[in-house]
Length: 518
Image (tube, rainbow, N blue to C red; front, side):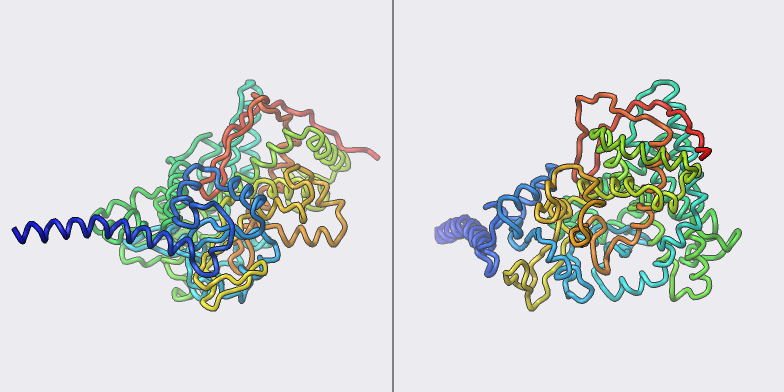
């Protein structure tokens, strides 16, 4: 009898204890010191589930814009998460000596190799590791180094234009969303391995790599909202041992290893031996030379990780920017006409080669440059905040003291729609980058957050800029482009990168212009 009473008491105790603990935890979240008075969605202050749901919907960038327009520069989007919408906070949060560090969101986005997660320049939270890793490879991403491979980019452009010409001649609607990513992928292949990855030639997603990367992005964006779940899911350290075949599922890693083995020999013990011709200008050749000279400076692991990061991140962000440029120009015919007029004038004056070179583009096509910048302003590739931990001592952001340990970050979508910096922020106005006074141009440049800021600025930004300045003028020079169903808008989905679908276009060849005889 006594045992039954005790059992009944324990059941009742547990029945009430668990809800009580949950309620207390929720209340502790809601009334965190220093954060309780920062405005935002009510539920977000209690639980991260609001944020998880918002990201799951795939429209978090527009949610962020609405919240900041309603609440101002600081918005509480989680129990200890603050979205910051003030450009003055960029040096505070991302400055070289700010003391703000990356959060657990980032390590989720790394490969597993040899049964261990391998941190890369993007995913690592260790600033010293980041500096050590970046030092030997950064030169390969400089514009000077990339321009040495411009003929290889031109070869991709030739295939791209040829394939589109074939589709135009048959009056076949073209999915430019896909073809622009095929182009970006093959260019990354040339920069990284001195080989095309086959996307343009075959006109399809080779080995399902685009689909695989999207799956990784979806997982990272969702799991990144509750990163503690990662060790229980794909980050479970037991998985590589229990399921050794896991690494074979990663198409990015497998392609990288295959490309390395085509040029060298990757041994079972992890040693990298030279093979084939040396002295190339692609990244594999450059980094192999460093590795052979000093394996401690750049190990086999380092080479594999840097190369696989290129494959993973090198195409999506550029393709997103390219799609944005084409879409905004189609939707604004008067801007398209100005770009065409500038192109045709430069063509008649013999200032443009075929394909258009990077130097020609930035020298002779200033309005096009403004169009590229305005397109990236209106549609940045990254659609979530770039998270950082506030230092232990706390920090003052937007005039308010934020406690140490709080997660803060800036979303480019919010920053780029600040009406004080960008008047009429929702409108496509390339002229703002040409006609604004010098002080306003400086202010806009300081608020331009497409590639991040500080020491963790996107290392591959020159690859994107080079591609954009080359392929867009060549595409507009060769084709008239219109939406196949102009009554329909494209669709966007935020999976960390804000991807677009629905850029189905009709292409018509343009007549070639003869150089002016004047």
